[in-house]
Length: 139
Length: 139
DNA sequence: GAAAAATTGACAATTTCAGTCAAGTATTGT
DNA sequence: ACAATACTTGACTGAAATTGTCAATTTTTC
Image (cartoon, rainbow over all chains, first blue to last red; front, side, top):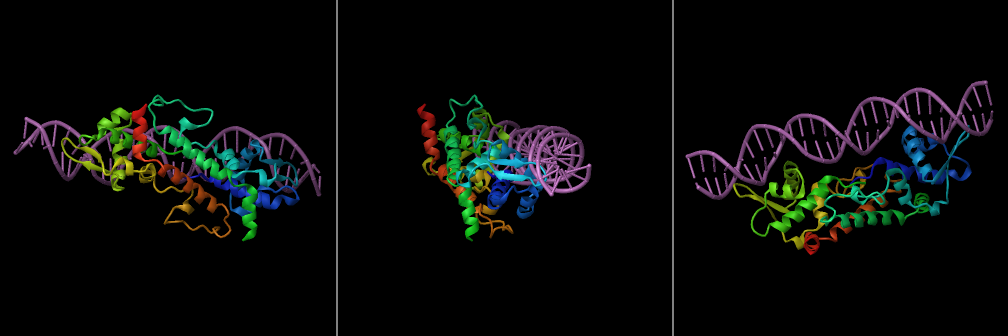
């Protein structure tokens, strides 16, 4: 039941980006340096975040990345889902593409896995990137 | 964010056990046959469930396994924790043995991972083995 | 035009998962 | 007694996922 580094790194990188993007694009190298994450690995994470329209990549000499939306309107759940895929505890509860298992009719546990994944989603969606940034600057 | 087969199989096996243990011990072979799970794999899962005092192994000729408690007093969360270890989304939030990360002081995400794991635990602990058995016999 | 930086795909080391196999111990039915 | 049954436990293995690395390419700016 661990969250992979993809999810954890992505959230940290997004907080970092939100805190430093006030004046122009932030490069991977800067974020990687501050956060202690491999710049090459960040490239892959940001590729997915971009596909999810959460950030925007700026090419060229003084390029980098920018948030695509106001931090107050980016939910942490969106970030995690973007890099880790839909929140589901089992293959048979992946929203949209539920794999039909032959035991489905008799299966009494599926509803519980579904409910649990929803609890996770609600928790992560109840916090915005702006919330985390506020905490970071407070301390 | 998937639950491993350990947790899923363990819950199914426990439901099966609860439904069939009225008259004496149930063998691995019986549960394995009904649930389509390898009997050898069940041995390992049940070993952990036994260590957690959720079931009791009965050796010898007509042996098998029995529930150690009333199904109404066995929470699904206990089963999952027994086979998968404590619910934590990160190493730095494993209860008891938090690995101290050098960024802990500046880390703004830890509290969120903690809160999320608690939401999972609460959801799984809100359902008992008896609840699942009732559903299974209803349909 | 050279340097900086994102974009993208291929690849590899490591770890975890899922399950098998086998040797050993305990108990029971006959 | 003893053979059959069934739990107990550890070692081991193949497959898959994770966690990156590396390199080639494209875009933009100074």
